[in-house]
Image 1 (tube, rainbow, N blue to C red):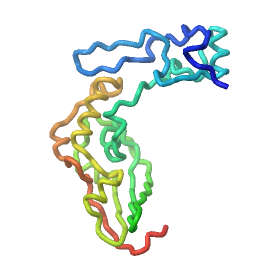
Image 2: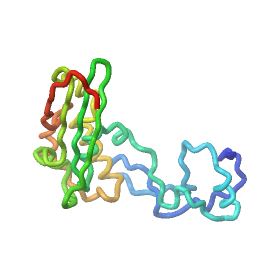
Image 3: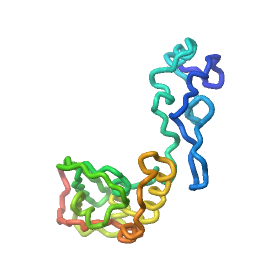
Image 4: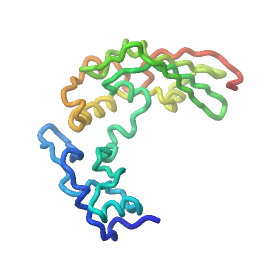
Length: 210
């Protein structure tokens, strides 16, 4: 049984901790400020009995957000990224990926296989040059006919130049690992406004059974 957070009589002061939370910044002019209150997800409505017992004793629950688990709400700049866009904003490159997209008459499905990179690469400038993407991402499309632009819009292969820029700018403002990252407008301009960024190998297949 869970308790309503507003109705709990437990002391929430143990959930107030320094250095684990930060208010979202909107521009470079905004100061870095912490949340000066108990670190609780605003969408959280209930408190489990186990956590409530810890709070009654004045202790921090093991799974409390203030134990370093607080991430804050996922912003729109990151929530709507496709798989390939997530690759392009990642500061650490540790694997390579092959994606197979099978298209039928009524549906489409994709499988991805990742391989460990021999040497992990850490980027100081993002996104990486477009030619580097061919080294870490390969795509094979199978089906009765060549994929159309509409087909590609339904896959995780879509790259939107504007969305990458927004995501990197947000991370630079709000993520400690990105504060010194360089955003290359030259590299960014190499990517499509809204399309797949790599050559897609097409193999005709009438039946797409695995």
